[in-house]
Length: 118
Image (cartoon, rainbow, N blue to C red):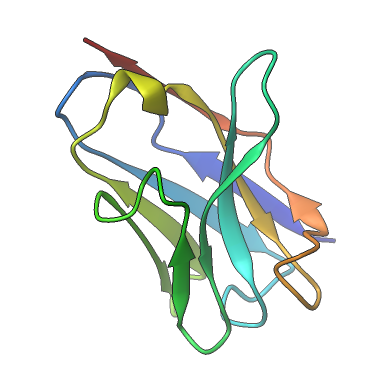
């Protein structure tokens, strides 16, 4: 049984930083594609950052240069380091994992709230 548990969400001021964590059980973080998504009420869920089994990464244009996705294979944890946060980054952030490809995520966490005030 796969479980993904996010943590690290908080309320911060614009320009601040946060690091989100996603602890995985029943799934190896280096196995296939994992990603971070975010969603605000009334908007579609947005893929923010992805990391492939190779270690290659991909980012949405809106966060490129500010967010970094990484993983700790020994601890089996996925991270999202978020710097230079903007009010537009306010959202519920979800960790997700795929059985094969980034185009389809099969497992989701419960989400962690990030609120950025100006």
